[in-house]
Image: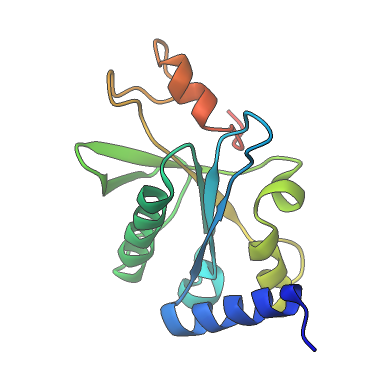
Amino acid sequence: MSTNRDEYFDSLLSNVDEHGWQFTFVFDNKTDNPDFGYSIGFPKTLNAPEFILFGLPRNLMHNMLWGIFRQIQNGETVHDGKRWKNLIEGFDCISRKADHSDLFTEYVLSSDWLWKENGNAGHPEVYQLVWPGSQQGLFPWEEGCSEQVIEAQTKLWRD
Protein backbone atom coordinates (compact mmCIF):
# COMPACT_ATOMS: atom_id res chain seq x y z
CA MET A 1 0.00 0.00 0.00
CA SER A 2 1.45 3.39 -0.91
CA THR A 3 1.77 6.16 1.62
CA ASN A 4 0.54 9.72 1.23
CA ARG A 5 4.18 10.74 0.80
CA ASP A 6 4.62 8.31 -2.10
CA GLU A 7 1.38 9.54 -3.67
CA TYR A 8 2.55 13.15 -3.33
CA PHE A 9 5.88 12.49 -5.05
CA ASP A 10 4.25 10.33 -7.76
CA SER A 11 1.81 13.18 -8.44
CA LEU A 12 4.66 15.72 -8.46
CA LEU A 13 6.62 13.68 -11.03
CA SER A 14 3.51 13.26 -13.15
CA ASN A 15 2.76 17.02 -13.07
CA VAL A 16 6.32 17.93 -14.03
CA ASP A 17 6.23 15.43 -16.91
CA GLU A 18 2.82 16.62 -18.12
CA HIS A 19 2.99 20.39 -17.52
CA GLY A 20 6.71 21.07 -17.21
CA TRP A 21 6.50 22.06 -13.56
CA GLN A 22 4.35 22.03 -10.44
CA PHE A 23 3.20 24.89 -8.23
CA THR A 24 3.31 24.29 -4.50
CA PHE A 25 1.43 26.62 -2.15
CA VAL A 26 2.42 26.72 1.52
CA PHE A 27 0.40 28.37 4.25
CA ASP A 28 0.66 28.39 8.01
CA ASN A 29 -2.52 29.30 9.85
CA LYS A 30 -0.79 28.93 13.24
CA THR A 31 1.66 31.82 12.85
CA ASP A 32 1.86 35.21 11.19
CA ASN A 33 4.31 33.93 8.56
CA PRO A 34 3.25 34.95 5.06
CA ASP A 35 1.90 32.34 2.67
CA PHE A 36 4.20 31.45 -0.20
CA GLY A 37 4.35 29.49 -3.41
CA TYR A 38 7.18 28.00 -5.39
CA SER A 39 7.99 26.18 -8.58
CA ILE A 40 9.13 22.59 -8.85
CA GLY A 41 10.66 21.42 -12.11
CA PHE A 42 12.04 24.54 -13.83
CA PRO A 43 15.61 23.10 -13.78
CA LYS A 44 14.44 19.80 -15.30
CA THR A 45 12.17 21.28 -17.97
CA LEU A 46 13.76 24.65 -18.77
CA ASN A 47 17.32 24.27 -17.44
CA ALA A 48 16.46 27.34 -15.36
CA PRO A 49 16.34 28.16 -11.63
CA GLU A 50 13.33 27.55 -9.44
CA PHE A 51 11.24 30.51 -8.20
CA ILE A 52 9.56 31.36 -4.91
CA LEU A 53 7.29 34.27 -3.96
CA PHE A 54 5.41 35.38 -0.87
CA GLY A 55 2.37 37.19 0.39
CA LEU A 56 -0.09 37.16 -2.48
CA PRO A 57 -3.25 35.13 -3.12
CA ARG A 58 -2.62 31.54 -4.19
CA ASN A 59 -4.07 31.89 -7.71
CA LEU A 60 -2.12 35.07 -8.40
CA MET A 61 1.16 33.46 -7.33
CA HIS A 62 0.39 30.43 -9.51
CA ASN A 63 -0.36 32.66 -12.52
CA MET A 64 2.80 34.72 -11.95
CA LEU A 65 4.96 31.59 -11.94
CA TRP A 66 3.24 30.39 -15.13
CA GLY A 67 4.18 33.76 -16.61
CA ILE A 68 7.82 33.26 -15.59
CA PHE A 69 7.77 29.71 -17.02
CA ARG A 70 6.44 30.92 -20.38
CA GLN A 71 8.87 33.84 -20.58
CA ILE A 72 11.85 31.55 -19.91
CA GLN A 73 10.45 29.08 -22.43
CA ASN A 74 10.42 31.95 -24.95
CA GLY A 75 14.08 32.82 -24.34
CA GLU A 76 14.18 35.11 -21.30
CA THR A 77 17.20 34.59 -19.07
CA VAL A 78 17.22 34.71 -15.29
CA HIS A 79 19.57 36.86 -13.23
CA ASP A 80 19.63 38.77 -9.97
CA GLY A 81 17.84 42.09 -10.38
CA LYS A 82 16.01 41.13 -13.59
CA ARG A 83 12.74 42.98 -14.17
CA TRP A 84 9.84 40.75 -15.23
CA LYS A 85 6.94 42.31 -17.09
CA ASN A 86 3.33 41.18 -17.50
CA LEU A 87 3.09 39.23 -14.23
CA ILE A 88 1.03 41.78 -12.28
CA GLU A 89 -1.00 44.33 -14.19
CA GLY A 90 0.68 47.72 -14.10
CA PHE A 91 3.85 46.66 -12.26
CA ASP A 92 7.13 44.91 -12.92
CA CYS A 93 8.49 42.30 -10.52
CA ILE A 94 12.17 41.69 -9.81
CA SER A 95 13.99 38.39 -9.34
CA ARG A 96 16.49 38.22 -6.49
CA LYS A 97 18.84 35.28 -6.02
CA ALA A 98 17.69 33.42 -2.91
CA ASP A 99 20.50 32.78 -0.46
CA HIS A 100 19.10 31.92 2.97
CA SER A 101 20.26 29.31 5.46
CA ASP A 102 16.75 27.80 5.70
CA LEU A 103 15.98 27.84 1.96
CA PHE A 104 16.13 24.06 1.48
CA THR A 105 14.87 23.04 4.93
CA GLU A 106 11.95 25.45 5.38
CA TYR A 107 10.91 26.70 1.93
CA VAL A 108 11.64 24.76 -1.29
CA LEU A 109 11.84 21.21 0.03
CA SER A 110 10.11 19.55 -2.92
CA SER A 111 12.23 21.45 -5.46
CA ASP A 112 15.31 20.21 -3.65
CA TRP A 113 13.92 16.65 -3.60
CA LEU A 114 13.30 16.68 -7.38
CA TRP A 115 16.76 18.14 -7.99
CA LYS A 116 18.36 15.25 -6.13
CA GLU A 117 15.90 12.72 -7.63
CA ASN A 118 17.23 13.75 -11.05
CA GLY A 119 20.77 12.86 -9.97
CA ASN A 120 22.08 16.35 -9.25
CA ALA A 121 24.46 17.17 -6.41
CA GLY A 122 23.98 20.11 -4.07
CA HIS A 123 20.85 22.21 -4.40
CA PRO A 124 18.98 23.88 -7.25
CA GLU A 125 19.44 27.57 -7.88
CA VAL A 126 16.42 29.53 -6.59
CA TYR A 127 15.25 33.08 -7.22
CA GLN A 128 12.71 34.99 -5.20
CA LEU A 129 10.21 36.93 -7.27
CA VAL A 130 9.65 40.23 -5.46
CA TRP A 131 6.67 42.47 -6.13
CA PRO A 132 6.19 46.18 -5.38
CA GLY A 133 3.48 47.77 -3.27
CA SER A 134 0.45 48.86 -5.27
CA GLN A 135 0.25 52.28 -3.60
CA GLN A 136 3.75 53.68 -4.20
CA GLY A 137 5.15 51.01 -6.53
CA LEU A 138 8.12 50.59 -4.21
CA PHE A 139 10.04 47.38 -3.55
CA PRO A 140 10.88 46.21 -0.01
CA TRP A 141 14.47 47.50 -0.25
CA GLU A 142 13.39 50.99 -1.35
CA GLU A 143 12.99 53.82 1.14
CA GLY A 144 9.34 54.60 1.81
CA CYS A 145 8.06 51.12 0.99
CA SER A 146 5.01 50.16 3.00
CA GLU A 147 5.65 47.98 6.06
CA GLN A 148 2.85 45.69 4.87
CA VAL A 149 4.70 45.03 1.60
CA ILE A 150 7.96 44.39 3.46
CA GLU A 151 6.35 42.06 6.02
CA ALA A 152 4.46 40.11 3.35
CA GLN A 153 7.69 39.10 1.59
CA THR A 154 10.10 37.07 3.68
CA LYS A 155 13.56 38.19 2.61
CA LEU A 156 15.52 35.24 1.23
CA TRP A 157 18.04 37.31 -0.78
CA ARG A 158 21.19 39.09 0.34
CA ASP A 159 21.78 42.77 -0.32
